[in-house]
Length: 255
Image (tube, rainbow, N blue to C red; front, side, top):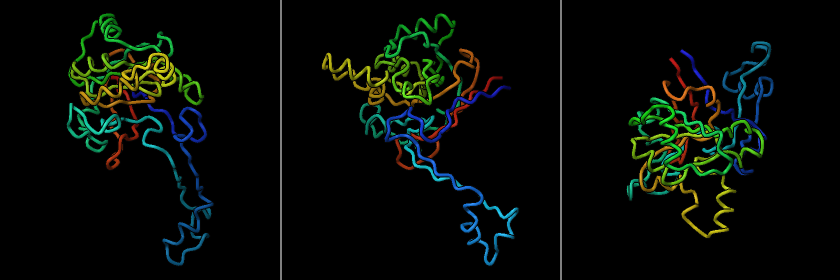
């Protein structure tokens, strides 16, 4: 069995998110935490600790969409499935988060390309595969090669509304991407909206969740190490009360 880590590492100072979303990690090392630790142990002193050192702790300020994460339907809108209250991340069924993986390699598409139903159908024909209920669909855009740089925010293709709904109609509950967003990079959408004034362009892949519930894995990596099919995906999110997303250690299991 081979395990492939599909998650990026959360770290300081990477310009791969908008500024307000960049994680901030404060590291408290074994020396700095001595007094903090000793207060839990009566009259113990520093010399009672191994080499005079205590525990290490980190304090982290980040959003639920920092790092590799799973978006809940509540992220897209207050309602899902044409009017039902949208699930938050702790309400996501666990059986959605483990299943057969399918990788669509769209890394040859230009940045900002809008994936349509035909793109997926052609790729499935090339794989000689038909989607099955609760397959976990991942798209490889190649954007992860720019992780750690500002280019990440403008890299990769994205999925349009009709293609997203088509996937959901095949019984898909969880999709994922190695790009910043399931939708096209936002600057491409903004430019097209300014030109056309068409509001249907705005976050169209995400807003498909208003009509039919689903979850998105975003900021994946190493999809190039996976076969198209024949592997499992584990992507259980951290439970955060009433949250729109949860961090995930996404792993592919190849037998």
